[in-house]
Length: 358
Image (tube, rainbow, N blue to C red; front, side):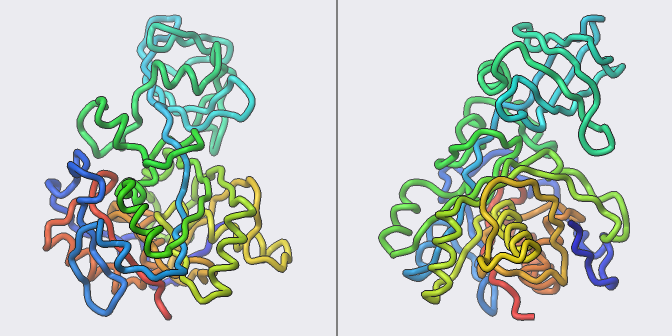
């Protein structure tokens, strides 16, 4: 579902110059030692992430994405001898089948086989996905187990080093539970047990949703008119208990903080689905696919606050945060962050935003 931006905005409006050295190649030494740009008030305040609990109130609710990153990157060889590099996009539930991005000198044909990691075979079933851009394969065993044993951490394209043991640990949240993501919900990477304990002590609640982040999160917007962009689809779900916690929080005057844009997309798409279905409840619960595209002009129903990392220029996520906090405000905060040498993207620093009144 595309919520088109007002015509005044083009993709170029979400561009900015980012010094390459500000793209974080490794995480901070400690999760909660990352910097936090507090943009929730009238003026930006430079903080450290572990200060977050002090910015919240008893009765507020943090909603996390509990997805778990799988080792989705594989290297293999076709039966003809050609090399293959693959990235699993999703594991089809209850099967040995996957959808994957696959790079080879010549695309493998249906019925052919690929040997991955010199350890297991996969049969090519055909093309699939949006515009037939993915490959449908059947693994010779449980995909999750094979990926865990033979796959590599699917680090984003702007991280230059090969994955190592530190990435296995740090490109994963401390509360990751549901396997299926090929990219981390990065705003949640800053939380450690000490911060979670401080939140609980302050009377701040927590709840969980699941959205299995796809590789499409890194796809550039290749059109100038935002309305022409087609979003990738991702699997998500809002549990009934999370919907109940959100309803109770709002009824009591508490604020809902979406931890990351993936949580935001899950919550707001569930609210859109509930309205379309004519439900009395704020959120439609249960598993579903979402291709929600949030741009300036979108009417937010759920989140009052957003915790997010700093995003790529011209990206759909820049459009989302601008829709939430206001275009001029977000661009000013990004100028502040660049001037203050904040670290950008997946392993970078975080920012706290409040929903714009207008």
